[in-house]
Image (cartoon, rainbow, N blue to C red; front, side, top):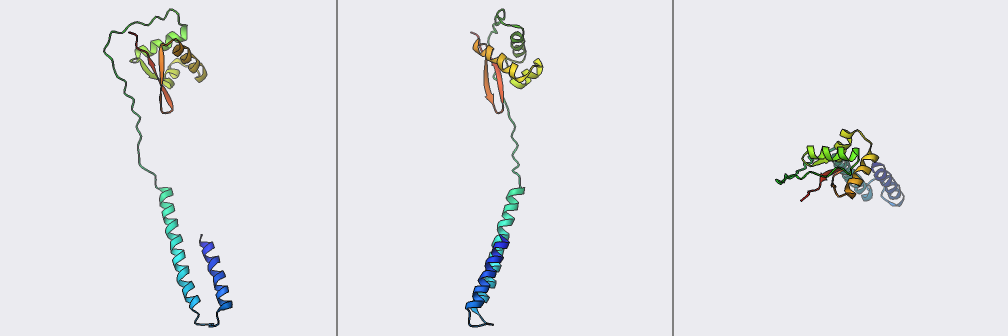
Length: 147
C-alpha cells in the first residue's frame, strides 16, 4: 500500500511539473506533500489495526460439560441373550458407567477400530437398545430406558 501511495504521488508530481507554469512556488507541489503525509498516515493506521487484529487471540475458554441426568427408577435388566459377544460388552460397559459414555471412550475401552465401533453401535441402535446423541465432535452413547 505504501508503494502504491508513493507511485501515485510520483506520477502526480510529474504531471504537476509538466503542467504548472510556476516552477518554484506551485500550489500543487505544496498540496502533494500534505496529501502524501496524510495517505501514508492512513496506511500506517490500517497496518497497525491489521497487526492488532491478526496477533491478538480471543481468550475464550470453551469447556464442554455434559450433564447426565440420573433417573431414580428400578433398573430393569436388559435381555442380552440375543446379543453377540461385542454387543454384550458394550451394554455391560454402559451399565457400569451410569448408562452413558462417549463413543471414543467406549472404543478405547473395547480396543476396537472406528469402523467396527460404528457398525456395532448401528446394530444396537437398530435393536433399540442404545441411542447416540451428538456432542461436538463426539457422540454420547446412552442406554435406552426400559419401562
